[in-house]
Length: 140
Image (tube, rainbow, N blue to C red; front, side, top):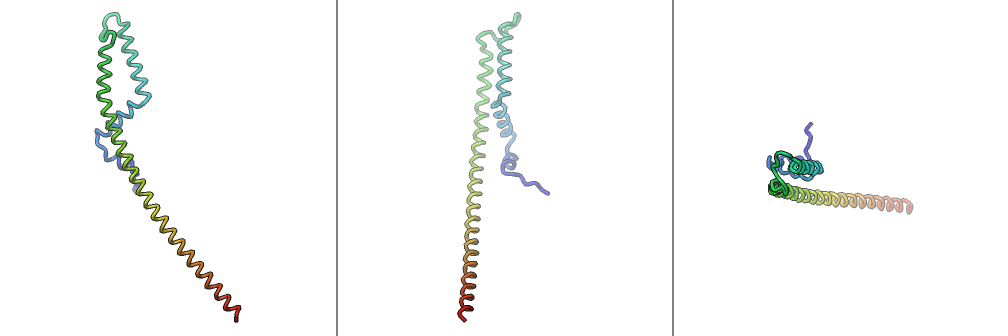
């Protein structure tokens, strides 16, 4: 038996390596784990440079650390924007699919309503016919 994939799984399968990478980076950078790890690294960097007795590779005001953050931001921003653009595209396609599903459901409901009305009319016709027969039989 073949398991059908839903819309999201089919869309995920069509993404390129770069798209998967951008989504993974955006997901990672938007997490508490990233913030906590980065905070620990920054505090460690600053502490080692402040208390280092022999070698200070980035003395106060930590110009190299600022450069690292600038480089990180320069790469992170476009990667996160790529992921957000892809999410917007996904949302737009999903909204269109939902809209089409709603239209199909509306048409089915209208067809059912017509069928129910037809059945109701048929039943009423049979009831009227039976009443007419009963009336004729009581007149005789």
